[in-house]
Image 1 (tube, one colour):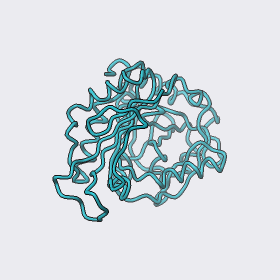
Image 2 (cartoon, rainbow, N blue to C red; image 1 turned 90 degrees about the horizontal axis):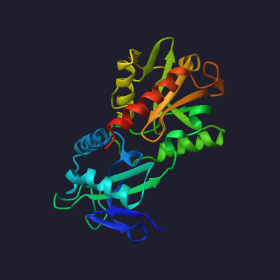
Image 3 (cartoon, rainbow, N blue to C red; image 1 turned 180 degrees about the vertical axis):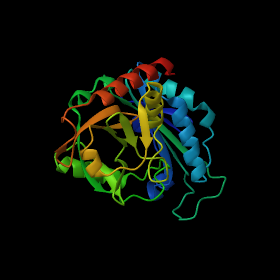
Image 4 (tube, helix red, strand yellow; image 1 turned 90 degrees about the vertical axis):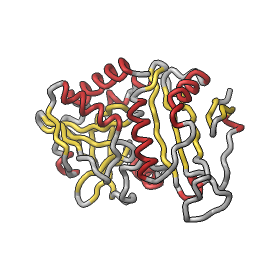
Length: 286
């Protein structure tokens, strides 16, 4: 049975979903996206994802799709239509299609393209990797400068994941001017003593929705948080390391460039933050 997807106002079987070959997301990577997790049939951090989507659109001078105010209901309908208990909903907005290829933006009467689809991930919150931990490598950060905008320009992060796979690891942390920026699809953290350290917000990293929630929960739990740059060497010498993302929640990192972090096993801070995040997020899920 095929999935039901959403394309520009219509719910369709996935095999019937089509957009123009002139769509600017295809030709220019001129689009933005969000991924919202579903646990127990409910949406996690939906309001944060919607707010960041609006920011991304504004930063790129891109029109909101006509259905912007209906996005919550569209998400819920896709969850229902596809019988999703645990999984993800991918949303993408592009500047649309003017019917030909041109570097210049199309006129204002060209409507944005809006598509959404689901991914079914049973037991997503019970990933065995949370007990095992991730092994990562470091790579040079070669992305464009506006990483705070969640665009569909994901070629280099994809290449980074393949570099990690070739090295027998799970993911990569990117490094710029000697400091870690973020993972290929996640924010990066270390723990030293009683302090959680993660890079400060700026144009160099994505302003993670899960990041914001986890840091808020950490402070509420009286954990010390420091937002600053750190190096790979500092991470290798840390007591713990972990990542956060909408699809992996809080996930421990146990090895960086072949060096064990701490004891080489998932640490207590990452484990506690994962537990808090999942418990608190489920309480307010929509």
